[in-house]
Length: 147
Image (tube, helix red, strand yellow):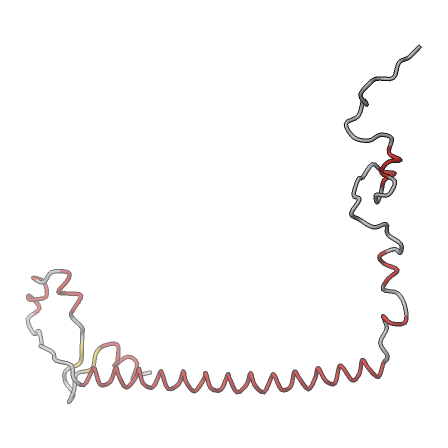
């Protein structure tokens, strides 16, 4: 005759009927904190509450259009302000460059042998300019004015 063992063969309570309160107990899943699903997930959205009336939808659309128009106006104002600020910055930079050129001190190098004797660092500091007029024009500025 067969004898029953003193200790159960499985570490957990067996048979699965002990877990029948858990979700998916028949599949061997043990999640006692989950409640059993009563309605299919996709079925919960179907119904008259899910569909709004045409009048309500058209009213929401009109409200959205008004809000978008107001937002566009605000965006346009911000764009204009930024454009004006940028123009002011550019004008200020231009004036600064002109004033810098007005106060520029220069020395005419007529002997080209001096240039050949100069080091690289000294050559980097040299700028070509037109000194024939009332004030010297740097080579970069004279090109800009021709355009």
